[in-house]
Structure formats: structure tokens, C-alpha cells
Amino acid sequence: MTRPIVPGPTYEEMRDPTRLPASVREEAVSALATDELASLNLFNINWKNTGEDVERIILPKELTGVQANVIVLSGRTFPSGSMKVGPAYTTLAEAEVVNGLRPGDRSIIGPSTGNFGIGTAYVSALKGYQAVVVMPDTMSQERYERIRKYGGELDLTPGTESDVILTLERTHSEYVSRPEKYVVLAQFELMPNYRFHRHVTGDAVERAAANVGNGRVAAFVSAPGSAGTLAAGDHVKSLYPDACVVALEPRQCSTLYDGGQGQHRIEGIGDKMVTLIHNVYNTDLLMLINDEETVQGMEVAQSGTEALIDRLGLESQAAKSLQGKFGPSCICNIIGAIKTAKYLGLGPQENVVTIATDSYDRYPSVSAELYERHGGRPDVDTLEAWAKSVFLGASLGEIVDLNGPGKHGRLQRMKHDLWTRFGYGSDLIERMASQVFWDEEYGKIEEIDPAIEELRGSLKQIA
Image (tube, rainbow, N blue to C red; front, side):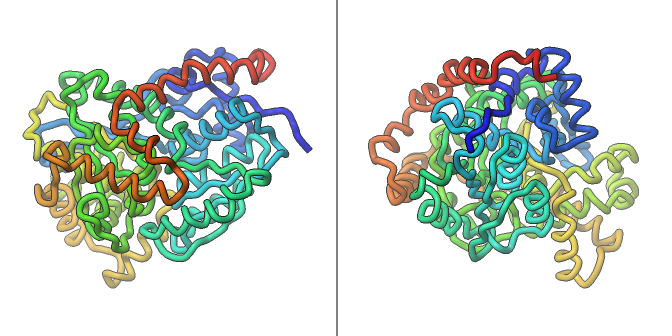
């Protein structure tokens, strides 16, 4: 039975939550603290804790070893614990306003390797839909548990993070092919993901650097899974045309770098594809990151406080503030940001901004696997060695300048070869080689936001 929609924010309200009525913001903040599954939490989908300020971490230079400021924008305070809930919400909200979807009509499908799937289950629960998350069968147990906690069902495909193409194939064969029963929040291919990150995350990246150094963003660094987050780079480039946008891949699965197709441990990235929503011509550099180092770096942040203080010279408060903040993909981004600062030779007034998609709470099982590989919990000497090799020792090897002859074109051909297999036309993919295409897609927010407002009615009745 079809039911009325559950209201949520516009793109502009997610970018600037102060545009919401004060009563809605107050009730939403209260709901986040007291009732995670209250629908008012939809209005907490923003980088600014439903206020004005982003949560950021300016990494100590004793840890990074570079002159530039490395700023990490934290997505852990979003409802469900990850910023990936944002594109899950926008994709579902656009299906409601553009395609007339209503609760009770059809089930929601979320292809994912974890955080987007968690976000799909969470948003679906708040908006009154049944969710099915399609994902590989070897992700962290914490991810599966959280999806089930939000009432989502799991459809598991064989393999690891590197085998998400099997998830994509399952999604198209079992769910996209049956639109009368399912609506697929296809993060790898649908533009609400791009729009959310260009408009909402891009603004947050800008704000994160606003009063640090020269206040500008010299580089934005992100490891693509769906590549949605890289759309924030389009916003950065609209402000600072000379800014560098950097994409990262696992060394063990270097698909964009050189066609590599191996297995890796960095959950959430390295999905063996150029996604449809990746604006490849706006990515300047491509770097490889060793997957084991991301897990070691996570462990340093989580349990290496003594080593960071006594051996690397971090202040006690700075070292302790790292605990609980990072998972492997977050550390991957941090390593990439350090490499970027070194590669570009950035100085003390210049800023590199990157993203922490989630936090440590969904990775204790990954730490347990690390202990097993290394014969137990690392001691302070091991943690010191890891900190120095992972962060201070970040190398300048395995970096490709994508602005060189033919580099972007190669990625564009990879996109064409994959996505024409899934029914997308060559003409569409060819248009993606122009920034005009991406600007037009972004400009659709001007039509979508009024439609969201009209559909939800007055917010005075919500709080």
C-alpha cells in the first residue's frame, strides 16, 4: 500500500543547515542524540552538525612530516556514522520527486561495499521503505550488523572489495531488470551522488580550509569507490582553477593506474572500474597506496598514542584526538594527502583537504585480522615503526600526472567499454568528456530543490 512521503532536506539545506527553521534544527539535533531511527534525523544529513561549522582535523606536522596543512574533513557525525548516507538520501529523494516513488510502492536496492549500503538501509528505514543491500560477502562484520540493525536485507555476492563488479552485475540482472518491483540507488552511475558531493561536500571542503593558512584549497584528495566524493573537486576547481584534484587507488588493485585487477583490503575504494559518475577530465593526479599501510596507520591512530607522544613528539591532546576517528579508507586518504603535499612542494600557508568517510567503529574486526597476521597486538616499537613508515615515510613513487597526453582519454575509454555493457549509450558517455555535461547535471539542483519543497509541504508541521 502506497503511503505519504517522509519529508527531508533540500540540497541547499544540506549545504547550509541554517536555512532550516530553528525549531526543525533543534528537534533534529535532539533526535540524533536520543533516537537514531527518528525520521527527523534526515535533517541531520549535512557536514555541519546541523549548524554552521564543519568537523575537521588538522593533522600534526610531527605526524605528516610536510610543511603544508593536511586537513581531514570528518564524516563520522552524519546519521548512521558515515557521510555516504548523503548520496543515499539524495538518490532516494530524487526518485520521489522526479519519478513519483512513494513508500510501499517498491523495495529499495543499494549496491555497495559497505557505507553506501548502510546509508541505503538507514534512509530507507526512516522514509518507510524496505531495503536490500547488494554487496561482497567478505566485508567487515560490523558493516553487515549495522545494515541488519536498520532493517536492511543482504544479498551477498562472491569476493572482496575488488569484486564489486560482480555486485554491479547482480544488481543489473536481478533488480534493474525488474523496475516494477525495485528502485535501485545506483551509486556508481546515478547523478544524485555527484550532485550531493559537488554541492554539499564541496562547500564543506571549502569551509574546512577557510581559516587555515592562506584559506584556500591547493589540493583535494580522495580515493574513489563510486567516485562521488571526487565531485567535490569540481566545486574546488570552480573557486581555485589551479587546485589539484587527486584520486587514489590500492597498489594491489591498480585499475585506473595500469589496469591492475588484484584483491585488496581497503574497504570502500578500489572497485576495479571507472565509474559512470567520475568526471575523469577534472582529476589531475592518480596515486597508488599500499593497502597494508592503511590498516597499520589505522592501528597507529587507534592504539599508538604512547608511540605518537613519546617517539614522534605529538602533543598529548593531538595524539589522543586521533583515536576512534579513522578507518582504512580514511588513512588511505591521509597518506595520499601527505604524498600530494610532498609531490607539489606545498608550503606552510597551503592546504591539502581530504575526507574521513566514517570512523573506527566499523573496523575492530579489521584490527583483529591485523593482529592475526602479525602474531598479536603491536607493541610500542612496532607502532612507532608503522607511524614513521606509513605517514612520515610516504613515498613519491607510483604517481601519474593525468594531464599528460592521452591519460584522460584512456580513462574515458575504460568508462565507455564498461558502461556500454550495462546499456548506456556511447553518445551519453562521449558527452561526459565535456565539463558542460557536468555543469548541466549540477545545475539540475535548481529544479530539484523546489520540487522537494513542494512535495514535503510546510516544515512548520514537522518539528
